[in-house]
Image 1 (cartoon, rainbow, N blue to C red):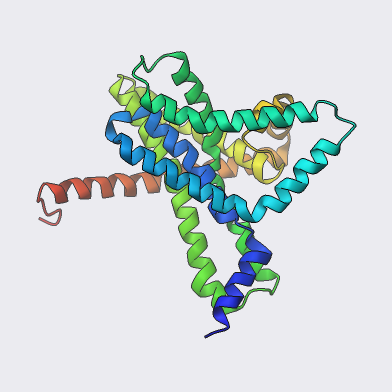
Image 2 (image 1 turned 90 degrees about the vertical axis):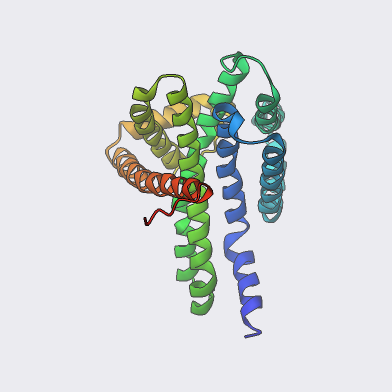
Length: 284
């Protein structure tokens, strides 16, 4: 069995390049924002800060294997003489990234009216990053590519990569479910229970569009800030073309169906934990 570990390390280096941790990091951003914006009272400051540190560590570890590719991309961007504004765009992108990271902490600590301008900015950032959570469903393509290449042994695939993919997809999509449930709880507390279902369906539709733009057109969440006109143009083109529109519609159906199933499981587990704390046996 000594050959097993080298094969696993080689498979990660050649096929995966840290995508699992990086995508989980992106999925956790809207989850943290949902607690900051909608359910601040349900999470103590120390636990929220601990979660932020953990998510930050996951992001650093996920970015590590991609640093050479990122540095090469930045180098090419700065050397592009045909686009004199590229340096400004780079600085703007870094500023937006830092702002998104600090916004959650600021909202969590503030005592101002939750309907203030900062809350609305946080809501926009939350909605922009939310499609990153269900996006992990499409990362099954990494497993298909890795196994079809013949580089990974069958035993490694069965014992490591299939369970790893299943766990990553489950965690990422669960972040999506909890984020929306936090938003639903906020709406119910403010007397807008009737808006929950329409808003859930709207979020699924917007996430389906975001997943298409990310997986097939390779846009990122921050492209809405760096290149908003390009994102809007490609989105309108996708919605008015038969094949992209069909893909988006099928994705919407998948998201809505999986969300409903995971929502029932999540709420059932929450109820089970509540019963356990009260000493109630659910089988009685």
